[in-house]
Amino acid sequence: MTSERFRAFSFVDRITRCSDRHIEGQYTVPASASRFPASLMAEAVGQLAAWAAMAELDFAWRPVAGIAAETRYHRIAEPGQTLTLEADLARCDADAVAYSGRALIDGVCALELVDCVGPMLPMGEFDAPDAMRADFAMLCAAGAEAGRFTGVPAPRLVPIERDAGRRLRARLQVPGRDEVAYFADHFPRRPVFPGTLLLDAMAALSAEVAREAMPGQDGSALMPSRVSNVKIRSFTTPGTALELEIELLAVEGERAQLKLAARNDGKTIATGRIEMVPAAKLPR
Amino acid sequence: MSEQAISQQEIDAVFPKVAQIIADALGCEIDDVKPKVPLIEGLDAESIDFLDLVFRLERGFGVKIPRGKIVEDARGPLPEAEFENKGIVTDAGLARLREFLNEVPAERIKTPLKAADIPRLFTPETFCKVVIRAQRTAQATA
Image 1 (cartoon, rainbow over the protein chains, first blue to last red):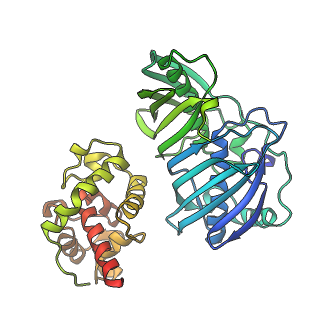
Image 2 (cartoon, chains in turn red, purple):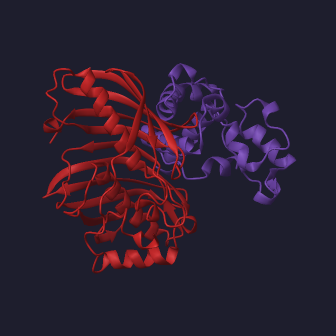
Image 3 (cartoon, rainbow over the protein chains, first blue to last red):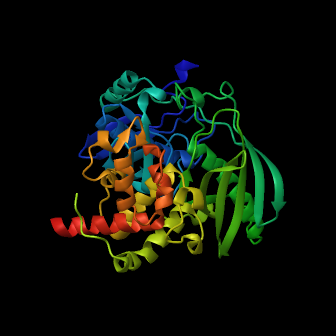
């Protein structure tokens, strides 16, 4: 499965500029991708910022998971579309990288990431520093081969307790290491369940609660418009069963605000808030 | 490092905003953020919360709090070798900590204290003092 390294969960195809803590790049969602959840647009911006941070620290450290104060979604990328990515590092040292960034589709802002913090961990625990250095050089030159990503499976969720329109508790079965390709890329030496896929699962549950809470809805898809105060507190390894809890906080017109929590064996490992709106009402 | 003592009045002035920022970062009720509650044992904070907190305080107060600054300031003029020995804070180090973290009850600063466990002593008041020191540094260099 090591051949999936730099393929199965890598969302920067090319770096077009990297200087003075500002980085720009691009990513094309493969037309053949089976599924590209909205949260992977945030993953792409985060990975771009991570490249800038890792390069600045000569690939001795890498950011893993962390904090996202606010993510705003304006439109959702579809297979075949190209995202133009940008990020600005506010701070970067061996403790943490702090950054903000955005993704554009056809010159229009599709996603904004505001005040993110990634704690730095020794690179060698996750991947080979030399291989990362070589990948960075390639991204900055000709770019990577396009079409590497094939998709991610939909989250495996089983409801545990439902108070319709108010609260939903469900079990998320994280795939085993050999069941999905992305663990070989995230990360080659230490598989970690990506925080953005955890958020994708929480968004799916949030859509259920929001739909029940807004009975006037005609059934059109509900999408996250704003995800805030996200904090990933610890790593989730392959094969873990997480308990997710979604709680409705408020409904204002066609917007629902919900609180998110994920627990592993009773310990809270991730928290955040999400706003769900009908896809057609995403704030442009 | 000699520094002008931080008065209770200065702490009281920044406490409400620091408490709100702590409540936001930890996702707890602001009423639970008492000045002397230990953040780790009392409010279930973890290392990622300290990172989050420092960035939020920087944004909220418009100051810079360099990484590792709190422990570095805590050590003060003591060289690292005199402050800790094989990861355990020395008697001289403990004396320095009792002075620097005077908001922490002295009986909590006792041997054997691992240097890595110093953040376990931190309270909301510790962070009020961090903000006040950062504000003083900003004024001094303005």
